[in-house]
Amino acid sequence: MSDSSTIAAVAPDEARTLADVGVQIRSDEARVRAGTYVLRDHLPLCVQTYREGLEMLPIAEALRRYDWLREKYYWQLVHVDQDDITRQVAAEAEPQGYFIWVRQGTRLTRPAQAGLYIAHDGLSQKLHNVVVLEDDAELHLITGCTTGREVRAGHHLAVNEAWVGRNSTLTLTMVHSWGPEVIVRPRAAVAVGDHSRYINNYVSLRPALDIQSNPRTFLNGVGATAKYMTVILGSRGSIIDTGGEVYLNGEDSGAELVHRGVCTGGKMYQRGFLVGNARCRAHVDCAGMLLDPGEEGFIESVPGLRSFHPEAQMSHEASVGKVAPEQVEYLMSRGMEEREAVSMIIRGFLDADIEGLGAELDARISEIATLAGHGDGR
Amino acid sequence: MDRDTSNILEVRDLHVEVGGRELLHGVNLSIPEGQVHALLGPNGSGKTTLMMTIMGFSAYKVTRGQILFEGRDITGLNVSQRSRLGIAIAQQRPPTIVGVKLRTVLDYIVAHDSVSAEEVAELVRRARVEPFVDRDINAGLSGGEIKRAELVQLLATCPRFSMMDEPESGVDLDSLALVGSLVNQLFTRESCRPARRRAGLIVTHTGHILKYIEADRAHVMLDGRIGCSGNPHLMLETISERGYEECVCCMQEGIQL
Image 1 (cartoon, rainbow over the protein chains, first blue to last red):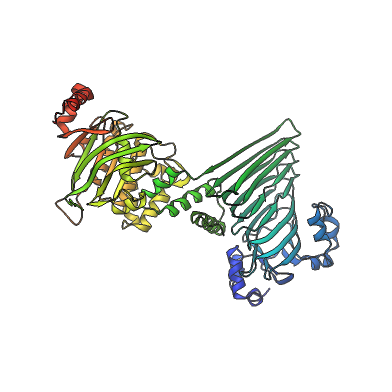
Image 2: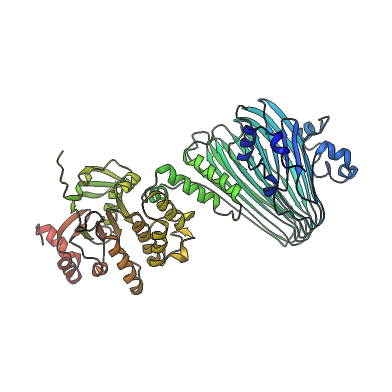
């Protein structure tokens, strides 16, 4: 557990790129992070943990070390034959990705971080990531996915499986910032146990050409809850299709899905689908803002509900609008430039239902608001 | 170009359309440096339209005429350019903006103007806007709260020329004294010219606000035109006794008070 090894492994310009997506590579890392995993292209650059009860390993090594991983977890939530993406990931001879294991009773106050980085143009990353939280555990995992400055095209295909035990909390904060022609296809699923909570924050800054992400959450435990917060900036030429499906299987489970999208061009789909299989409460809220989207740009909001249980209380709302000129000019009448006023309004729109995201995401969201205010998503 | 620098504001033959309909039909108005004028007139006569046009809101299209500020033609400037020249407005129904707090706007002003954070904090206390300074701006506020929120922003920016749309409307008697004293503060002396106060234009229906702020002159607006101008107290007296009907007659007869 040497503090210097992540700095030695990651080049300074790569460290700066990773910092933009919330992954801090620095000498006093152990003071701000519980552990670090960085993958460049196909090569794990570093794996470090700074706390007892937390294990982070490259998935291939973890599979060699722990037989139970394959038996209980690996390919157990996402099916190998789900689609072409899962088949491509399964076909890798040596699987890439991380395994994170938080042992029973371990509540980590600092986040662990995983940086997934494409350094070479045209590269395909095919990843399989597994996170296991045992009972009475807590983890905030920041995953920053990004591409080097020179990288335009590439593929990021990922299977993500996570288990949250009883009385546990998993917060997954994903920050994406991609090259303009990158294709992104995560296939994710999370299972949540009794009285546990899963929080999924997704922020996309520099949009990829094509993102399709619709993670599934299975609230299997009694009183299990999930909250999704998705903040997306879309720009000309991009196709961004993001959302989440939540299966409310446990009695008194609950879910809240919030989606905020700003479209400065391109196609944006906001999804959120709730399936009530038990007595539960759930709400999905999609709101989009069109900002000079051009002729091709649009936002399509598709919140959905499916109820199998008479005591499933579920609701949805959706709205798509523009920045109102009278709001912009109101702020201009206090001395702001037009773009400053637009940024402030977008910032407010994105912030409206996000409480306590933390400084890292706060900064990212400000960046989205500023980019959008300049009428330039890229 | 003829420049009359003794007028801070000069409106010449102003015609304004909103949504394709002409609402101002040739307004002429001059406000000298250091003077505060009152604008009277029945509902729908164009008082708000005139103020919003002077501020430069784009829904108010100038089809003819000119607006001069300190002798400079500002008809083509946008709202922020006019704001930076020192023009400000306290709207009667300002928009609500989800997620944008009154504090966010005040923080912006502190960061960009000469006012200090301590001075703004003092204003926030004095105007009693603390209860909603961290809520969405203008959301769910009473009439009096809106006035105070608007006035705090104006006081923080220290404008050279302030416009106020019915500062007393929807304000109960208790808060009227506070609103009145805030308005009074807005028209204090200019720091560089101790003998001259800041200028402005106040729309008032009742004239109550004029107990707190001395107006130098009043204008009555009728159907998109300034009907007559004169002593504010005499005019208010006439209007409260005989209503605007008298003004309409005056206008038809071409009599000036």
